[in-house]
Image (cartoon, rainbow, N blue to C red; front, side):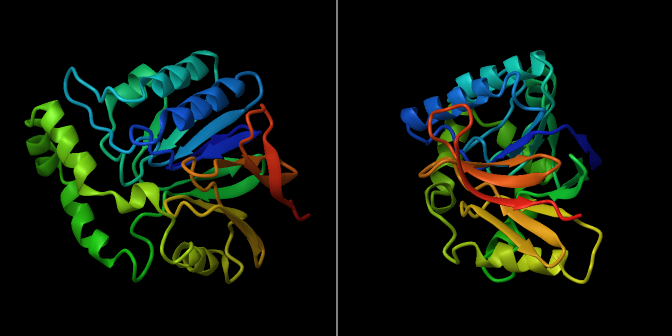
Length: 256
């Protein structure tokens, strides 16, 4: 999918709401509400929820405040792009129609403030760490498997889902983000026509110039909440500090 997002564009990922503490959830919702009138667009780069699934008339109960805050931002005119992660890849009508997000499975490519950008959650990209996951992912996203899972009672289904994976929700990547960084270096190398490449998934915040492009990762909201801000002039990595602006950790200016 391709398109254009207005700047300043705020990028967040891997909040894992539903298993995150109440304080973390409250800080994230407060951050969302601070974007009204300040952001030009918002990107959720996967795993906003630790588990998301939509039945015909039921959705997961946990962290509904975040959904409400997102719907309010949409109603106020803020474009929201949501890239599905490995924990929230079963979205549908609720996220698109009720919340108003442009919910997409797979990578997004387009323009953000003049930056030729590609955004992808990053699950399955690491050569060694994700080998087992790459075997399971086609089953998880198979329409028949989803249909069978939908037949389970929501309480049972949620219990199964939350009990099936714990490492990726609470821990940084064992490789400290090197696998995704190497994948980004290959994608940005060779003078390819890409200014900015954004991944999530590893929970390791990053902002680095690689050859003629920039690699960025918004990190995770779980332990030390961080996010990205993209403007025509630069890309910034910020730490949430309770204020509307946050604390700037790093910045890379646009090259002429």
